[in-house]
Length: 115
Length: 116
Image (tube, rainbow over all chains, first blue to last red; front, side, top):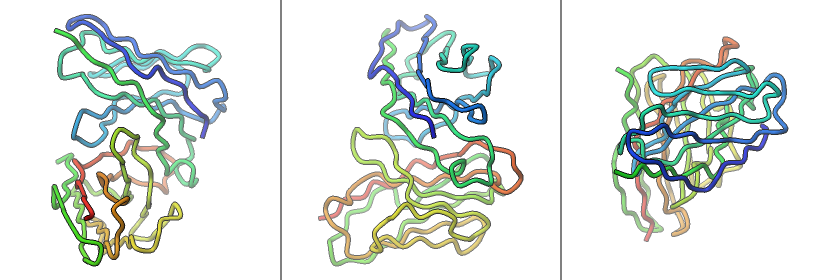
């Protein structure tokens, strides 16, 4: 799986949009970008994923650059409960391949939402 | 029900003990996973089961022995562990690995293991 690079930590004010960047310059055409987060003392939680188009769900938006070498996760109105470590993961698309069965977590970004 | 449950929440064991961690899901998922997470580190994959068969073993020491008795249950048997095995052990499940469609993984809250 392609390696990802994320800032170690970020701060955001409550109620503002939190924009979390991720670089994945060696991503292949058949690899998706996934985002998970892990709130303290809990298991990781799936947020969103995308291939090349921008995606939005009830939790967040994912913006992928046209060359697919980077992406940004956007939490539109951050709350204190969004304080967590956010992981950007690149994952091959064929589920039957062993590579797709693995989630390879990097160090992630520790996002702190301040009141 | 989109929940993965793990028992126990906490476990303290000596190096000569034998214990088991249990994971359960009732979402009809056919793929289940064990991850290990050391403090302030990301989770690391240990094992993957697909349709109750071991699919991936990430070169995990034999003192960790996984078992998938049925599609809803996943166990991790522990024997002769070392203090450095102290960690949070996370279980996850996902819908299927054989259809060609990639599904997200649902994680349980983990078992915090301390080896003394």
